[in-house]
Image (tube, rainbow, N blue to C red; front, side, top):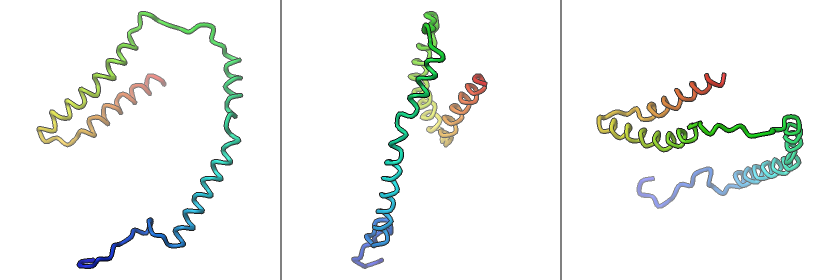
Length: 118
């Protein structure tokens, strides 16, 4: 629209009657879904109560010599700092694989923990 003073309104934002009706239908469907879901609230509480009654925990297992809590906190602090440092260092060298680096590290740990859980 070179040289024109007219503005183009996107179709989604237009105020045509058809779009207005579609928004009303969408609002009606979402409201109905929320109203129908109200009866499901609290349905799982009975199942949790039955499971807790079947397997009561007598004592909480603790291991005071375990350093896993400290190690996990240290990793939560060190891992992002190390990742950002590596990415900044390699960016200066023209490397574009930062997403692959972080995604690869996450994938390796995810596969490792999935293997341990299996």
